[in-house]
Length: 155
Image 1 (tube, rainbow, N blue to C red):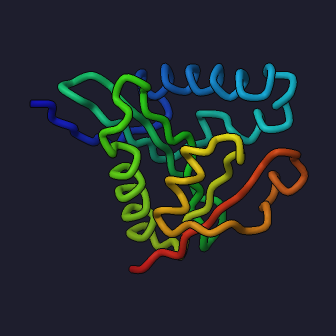
Image 2 (image 1 turned 30 degrees about the vertical axis):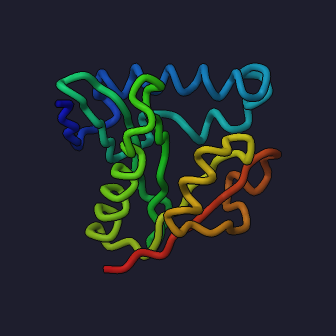
């Protein structure tokens, strides 16, 4: 039986670095190339993510997600990604639970995130988890194609 374990690390983690490159290629493919998302790239650098969560299945890295301070009250969720061969096992849902719990423990009032409407599975996951659409926050307020969500945390 597969055992899923979750490990906190940082942006220097080798598995996260690999997933980061995979997600960059994926996001590029969604919009027809890196040039079409060049405005987003500076705000999504891996080294800006303070807390990184990696999901492992039988010691194989299966998924990642990040959490970083956005403001005094908001933690921003970044790079929620599940390797396609491990999808359908509710790993993203559990990672979101862990991220939200960590954000609350760090004293944040809510989590915020940015995605694109074209990422329908991600948007569905966030809405199912109680995220609501908000006005795009900086720097995404000036980037076409961005959509932002928030969730109030209970501590």
